[in-house]
Length: 116
Image 1 (cartoon, helix red, strand yellow):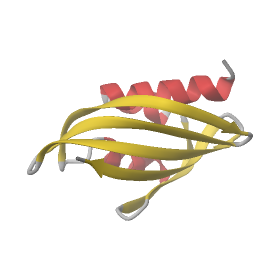
Image 2 (spheres, helix red, strand yellow):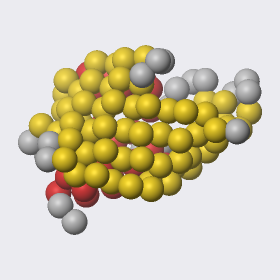
Image 3 (cartoon, one colour):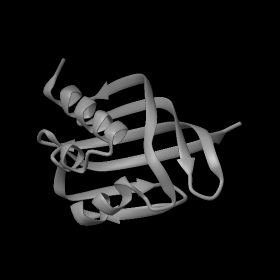
Image 4 (cartoon, one colour):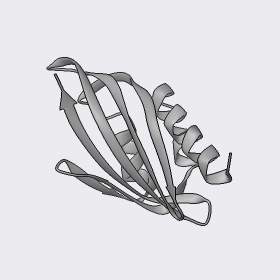
C-alpha cells in the first residue's frame, strides 16, 4: 500500500469515527473541499466545521467500493449511511476525488447522491 493510499485509509476511518485530528492531519493548511451542489470550504478551520455538520447526527458508515490511482489524484467511490437530524436515516452513494500535494490532501471534490 502506498503512502497516499494509507493517508486515504486514515482519512476515511477518521470520518467513520468523527476523529477530527486524524482527518485534519491528512490535509494541507489551504485544503479546499467542494461538496458539489452544497458547499465549498477553504482551509482546515472550515473543513473542520464540516466534519460534523450540525444538520447530521453521529458518524457516517462508509463503504469504499473502488479506489483509482491517477497519480496526484485518487478517486474513491462507495456507499454510506447517515442520520439527518430532521429527515432521519438516509443511504447515499459518493464519489470523492482527492488531489494530493506531496503526501497531503490539498483538494477534495465530493459528489453525493441520496439513494432510495
